[in-house]
Length: 340
Image (cartoon, rainbow, N blue to C red; front, side, top):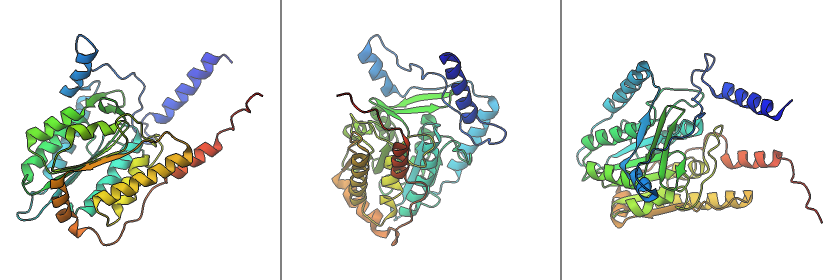
């Protein structure tokens, strides 16, 4: 059989496995088309700067899908509860910005973990697409995230309450990528997120960004009232984003393990970072170097917010991403012996 025929046959099989079907309507759409160039400008510098405008494109979506997603988002936003006067309420948003199902699984469970940790029942919103088992939430996108933040800004007392935002997706050196199958594309840069939060007046915020190169968000968004955690340094990749995983490395270490415990946020971040460093060293991966920054003002209101953390730790759920990576590595054939 010719090499080309093998390639086409394998590709067709992969698409058949990934494509939604009547047998499993909750299967997420695959990425088959190239990611389009969303930049504008006369040269490379202008093109790079144009990402700060928040480019967002959707194409090939049926009217029925548009209406369904609008109804889902409207219902979720309408269910959010207003703040309680005299109480520091946390508003939790978790969003999967890519249709690879690992991100949807992670965003769903992160919503449950953060809701429990911060007593945010009725004030938690999950934006996530299908994950192979369910498709019951408004899908994540940059536009949906902006609308969610805008609604929360209306409900919260911005001098008293706080936003807890968890994003999970693929990343690039210029920001987070929104990529839903072959129909949704976008870039969320640090400058764009800063502009949105600034326009809405949301200053008290915990931002947890799980993506490659996510450390670029810290210099732009650090402030006295911000706490920011990222899965990697600004010039490093993170790991574990294979579509069949239950968690990324960072999501597993930070959300699934450290934040289930009654630890202050800074201690949880330190524990997660140590866990990831150990996993990466064991697997001989180039260190991702997760980062965190907590402003002095945030330390004060975080102490108040975390005074009532659950007394007992929750149990991790799903497959350990490290164990899955180790098993996959062990199953690979040994490299050929070097010539002498």
